[in-house]
Length: 370
Length: 125
Image (cartoon, rainbow over the protein chains, first blue to last red):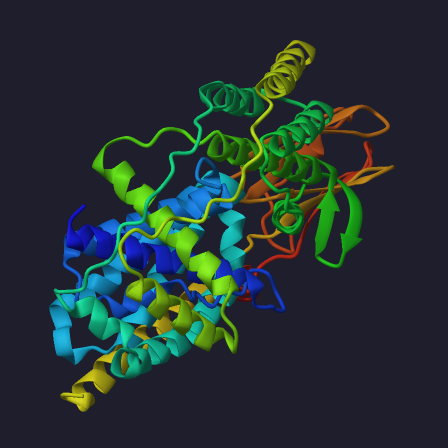
C-alpha cells in the first residue's frame, strides 16, 4: 500500500468518524445536517490530486454505506450522488480559481450541489417528484451550515496541526494489522434473493409481513435495529402523499387531504423501502468478499475507522478536543497497531435461510393472490 | 492570507448565486401545485392531483360517471344520465371552473390551486 493510498484511506476514515459523531449531536429535526464529514474533504482540497480526491470521495460514500449498513439500498445512491457532486464541484472550483476562492465559497457551492443531486436522486429512486417541496428548506439549511463549516475549515487549516502533517510528504501512516472477518456466502445470496422477492411483492398485507420478516432477518444477521430512520421514512412519505391526492377523501385539512389511494401507495412504498433497507443490512452483515486493490483500500479505511472510533471513546473533553486528540494519537501511532476487534456472534445460517425462504414464499403467494 | 479581497468577492458571488437559485427553486415549488380535482358524489368526496393524467369512475344514484384528467384539465367523458349534457361542458382547471351532473349527483370542482392559475382567471374575468 503506497503512502498516498494510506493517506487517502486515513482521510476517508476520518470522514466516517465525523459522520458517526454527527449522530451523537442532538438536533431539533432529524434531517438537519451539519455535514461535519465534509470538513476533512475541504481541508484536503489543496493537497490531494484530483484522482486521490475522487478516490477519497468514493471511499467515504462506500464506507458510510458499510458502517450504517445502507450500502445496498436506495439510500446509498442518494448519499453517493451528494458526495460525488459536492466533491467534484469543490475540487473544480479550487482547481480553477486557486487562491481566488476560499474554503467558504467551496463549501457553500459544494453543499448546494450536494443537496440538488440528493433531491434529484431521491425523487428518482424513492420519493417521487413531490420531494422537491422540501427543496427550499433543505437548501437554506445547507447554505447556513456550509457557511459555518467553510469558516471552521479555514480556521482549522491555518491553526490545526493535522493539515500540515497530511501535506508533508514524509508522513508515514502505519498499516494496521487486520484480521479477516468471516464471509457468509449463503447469507449474501439469500439476502439478494430477498431483495428480488421484496420488489415483486404486491399488496399491503403481504408487504407488511415481508417487512416484519426482513426485520427478523436483520436481527438474525446481527445488525442492530434502528427505529428512527424507518419512522422518518414512513412519516415523510405520508406527508408527501398529501400533495398527490388520489381517491376517496378520508381526512380533509383545508386544501390538503389524506386520500385513500395515496395513503395506500405511500404505505406500500414505505414498507418496500424499509424491507429493502433491512435486506441491505443483512447483505452488509454477510461481509461480502472485497477483491482487488479497491477492496484493499476499503478494508484499510474501515480498519483506520475502527482504530479512530475506539480511541475516540477513550478521550475526554469537548467534542472538538476529543476529535483532535483522536487524530493526533492515530497519526502518531507506530507500526504494528492492530485493529481492536469486537467479538462478533456468528450468524445462524440455517435460521437465516429459513427466514429468507418464508420471505420468498410470501412474495410468490402475493403474486398468486393478486 | 493572500488576496483576501478576491477571495471575499468570489465567495460573495457564490453565496449570491446560491441564494438566487434557492429563491428561484422556492418560487417554482411553493404554490406550484396545479390544483386538485375534487369530485363530490351523493355519498363521498374524492380528490385527485391534476398533474397526473388518469381516468376516474365514480358511482352516482344512476350509475357510473367517467371522468378524465388530461394535461392538467378535467372533464366528464361519459355519465349514466339521460341528457349527457355534462359531457358537453368544457374541461376545468381553475377555481372558477366547475362541472355538475345533476341527475347523477356528481360535482367537479378545483381546490388548492396555485397563485399562477388565479392570475390567469383574473385576466379572463
